[in-house]
Length: 332
Image (cartoon, rainbow, N blue to C red):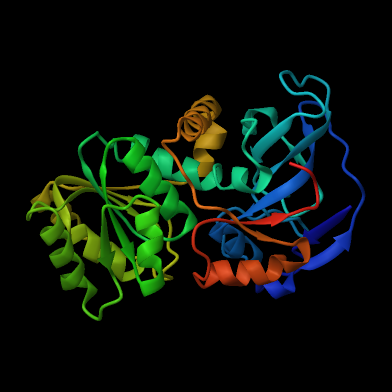
């Protein structure tokens, strides 16, 4: 089979496309013929060597697949060859076959195609746990979503709306305004100005009758973090998801005390390892919301397998709205 390998860390162009042996499932493993592999910002960090979890090289990167079960190992229950599935994994997605664990694998709704399925997995799981678990979002509250035109941002907009919240979507580029509105945002916040510290808070206060927002989801870091912190309402909660803005910010603890606000972090992979049943239940709820029409993710941008390095370059510089995936020539 064909697979991309990280032999030396570097830019996406350093990925090596190789012919490697077909995979065989061991006990408690599922072998999947990959139809689509989700492309996410953490993949850029993995390839460059800057992610928190890095396997021994050479390895196949990629954290999310949709496809068809080819075979199951001894001890696997609940899955059989021919099943259409979505699965998350720590690495191994950017190949024509992948080995996954049953606890990380979910049957697809009948009407959900493979490429669009990858838009309903990792980014929606991340947004789900940020909103439900870390922020304890309640119906009627207001959420500010940073990086709102990205994969996690779109998922956060849609899930927050499905959970009964009002959503303010922060974007930098003019062409992102209509996009996030189409995804369900109630208000668009412009974060392209020179004085973000003052301008973000002013826009938020204007949109919330001077109250501020109850929840901030921050996948950006850098100057957005401090500006968003100032826009929180009393007892507001900010959830740190990532640092696509580059800089890792810090916070003075006395500011949290004075404003009665809190900051927490989310690393989704910990939920996968520590609370797999919670992840399974969350994915079932996400699929259920999609089937009911409460979630309407935009179409996934599809790339051919040989376009993966270029797609990762685009993801790295924020050049893709919503979700992207590598798509193989397989029927859905």
